[in-house]
Image 1 (cartoon, helix red, strand yellow):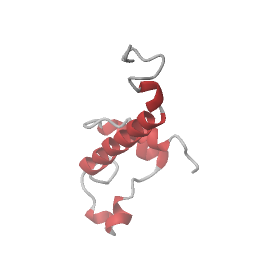
Image 2 (cartoon, helix red, strand yellow):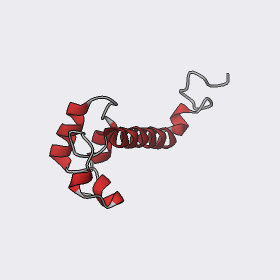
Image 3 (cartoon, rainbow, N blue to C red):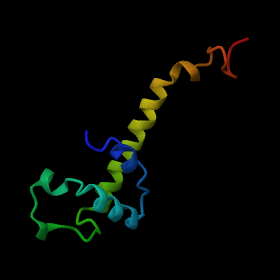
Image 4 (tube, rainbow, N blue to C red):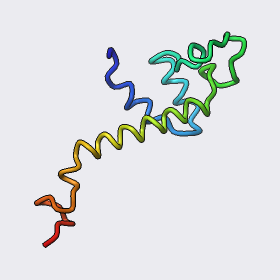
Length: 91
């Protein structure tokens, strides 16, 4: 992957922040709505990136959830209640 930071940057897109979507699209390119649905540019919605904002924000929330779950799974031993340094450890 050329832009390893891309998932994390997309996960930061807050619902309602059109300026952030536009900045992201200028930095990384389109989100792929046209290709996915094989639409022409004339069929674009009125979003700053030319793609449906709700669709973009839904994907951003999904990516954020996936990254958080991945982090949890990678760190589950430290977060486990029985881990040696856990404040929840059974005593």
